[in-house]
Image (cartoon, rainbow, N blue to C red; front, top):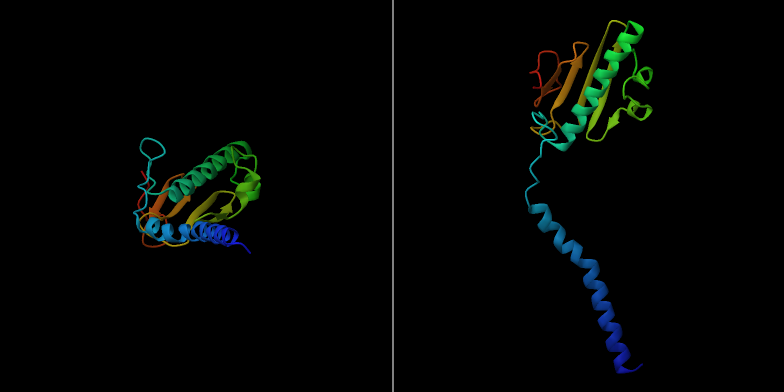
Length: 152
């Protein structure tokens, strides 16, 4: 092999190696930078993170769907699949896995309980709870219930 071919191959190998390792060198630096501060989605948004905003939005959709279902059938839906096409509740929303949160739903004809539990509870991943009165409660230390503070 000629010296120029070997030199070119070494140069190409160096660029490939640098291209593969550069992201590994940058990743730790970006992991050290503070997380972006949550930007409210609307005036008065009570969420503390994007995950909470999604969980609260889901709860509002279920509450509105239950209100509409009750108005139409004179009782509440007893399961999430029963709510499909009520309000803006879709078939995809029946899935209890909602990203950082898991949905729990218990329905009776005269009432229901909806809760959202984060994978890990902390100040930006509170647990949420709502009943047929439509008020959403939150707790950042344990699973929320009817005695937890109401989300404003």
